[in-house]
Image (cartoon, rainbow, N blue to C red):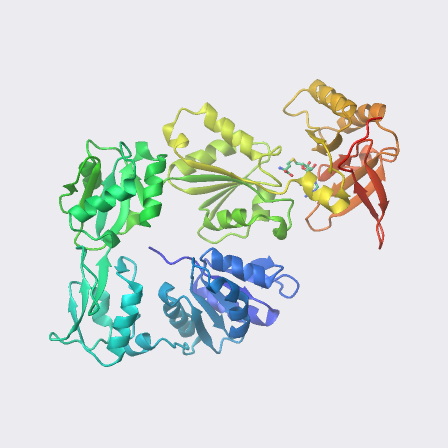
Length: 566
Ligand code: SAH
């Protein structure tokens, strides 16, 4: 299992050079720079505290080029919460000091040593066990799991107190540690996959060398049944490297829940005649699997298994909304999804807006019109087990990709497509972002319309517009005009004017949330199609919508929550 890619966070231009040197060690890492102070960062941010806390909560290793105190104070509110504890380091702006702060069990000292070596300085390691033995016993490398952390801490403090230790079982990495070994020692480090009672004089380390193959059928509580099967076979649950199931069970919720409960990855392979055969086909070098009960087989290898090499994961497809453009208006779930994506698909402008991406992430930019083709491509990638993101601006369900993706799935009979984990993640739609800047023009009932007749007959648009106006709804027009649709907006306004007075407030929001945004409040009488282009959102008030002057210039627009019939 690879360590996740760190984020390098800087506050000022003076740190950029050091940040770039660190980036050479981790080419996939992005440099996050405070927007108003740093030019040339990979990812500008507005708020240092919010950014740092978000990275921390997403379990991203953090390399902050600033005073240790700033980092500590910023993360302090999160430290008492249970949850992620990624490595966190403070590095001096000029690269002269590397201080591991948090994430001792997440490998912060390893990271600190790597960075310090890259910068040609010494890391400020303060962990006594690590200093003495040259390794953190409580943080075994991937492929091994520590039995119990609290017992482990006691054990290490006994060792530091001067006791010697015996090593039982195979643990190649321990050979490099400077441990006071003695075959007669009272303390022992025991490495093995068998179930074992924890004892004060023993540090238990489990090699993750066990594969549990299971089927979804007839399991009420699959995690519990797996625990019982392991217990029956005298195998420690901590030794499980991953669960394996048949491709045909991919969408099964009980498997997902079991993997989550056991804290292990879930992988899939082509169905076989039995779960034992499933395990054996996936990992040929296994010892013959023990079939335990119906639908569970346990197989033990003689060294740790790498789950990434076994079968493949369930693919994931997320259709996300970026919001209008500004990073602060993007929901955190979307940011997290972008961070985990292998492939990013979408219209080039939106893909660029969603980036920058790491070197390991693949961008697939296409023309705006190729929606169905893009949706099918997304499923093809996700069905291979990749994590795929399809980007839309605003909200993906508002005149955007979510419906196209569902249509592609609906049309398909391919089980591999239907087995993909599909999720839509919402965004702030242009009408809402524009309305918020103007005040509350959509504060009461309103109607959202696309004026584009590319995908629907113009007659339908006229009819809906007429009825929406008759119903006295406030109106939000998406796709109001384009070079290939020059006359439609003018015709739409004729219809609106049959129902509304020339004094009706109109809001024009252009490139809202993007560089060079403009917001104009005018009246229906003043509105002409020349004031509008395809990057504009048009909001037309109802008979109740009103305006009043804003201190400092401009106007507030709102539609009251109450209604008076005329
Ligand atoms: N899914 C998007 C809408 C796509 S349709 C959303 O929910 O916002 C594209 C239309 O949306 C554009 O023609 C324009 O009318 C409007 N639009 C999108 N982004 C905008 C922005 N930042 N400012 C103003 N209008 C925008």
